[in-house]
Image 1 (spheres, rainbow, N blue to C red):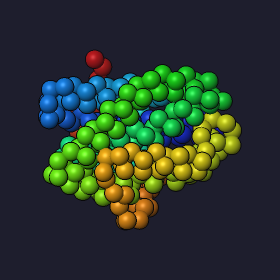
Image 2 (cartoon, one colour):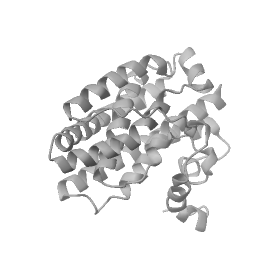
Image 3 (tube, one colour):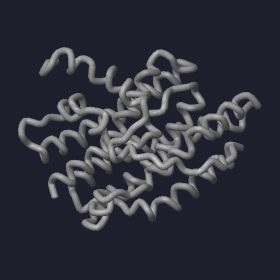
Length: 250
């Protein structure tokens, strides 16, 4: 049970960790000072959530495992994030669409995890939900502002949505571990959340004057450790210090 719970925690933490790194790449490059600071703060929130999850995972794993070893010493195939979160910061439209698609899912997931039979997960979810409520308001408002803005901003948002929306279906590709966590009352039933999620997303996108793309869902396997080429580049930056200076401490 501990091994499966450990792997489930990696799935929860890796999504926030990889997106947190993507947002950290934008520090100093936001379209305005206020937005730059907001994105940086969201990145810090996500890393805070990751720390809580990985500290718990390290305790379960034992054998001198730490939150740092989990974060910095795994290969790409040992990461279990959804592929949406790896997608590059092509432009501000891609940043916002990617953020909203994740935030809307994360809010639903955390609301359910607050009722988890695992008290530690429930406590982490309750704390994280307070931050995520802000995240989803931020990304949703930017979706509406840009989607229903100028013809150029609408076009860029639509292009970003066309590319990123098909990745969102991976959130609900419930694997064996997620199914077992649901059966034990630890994790949510992703099949039940799916209809709620897409209903909320479609309502927001309609308000933003954006059209749901006709392209089919992308059958990705990020949660199984099969990733896009982008993850390798992310990890080469993210893990550099620990790889070059093993066991270094601040």
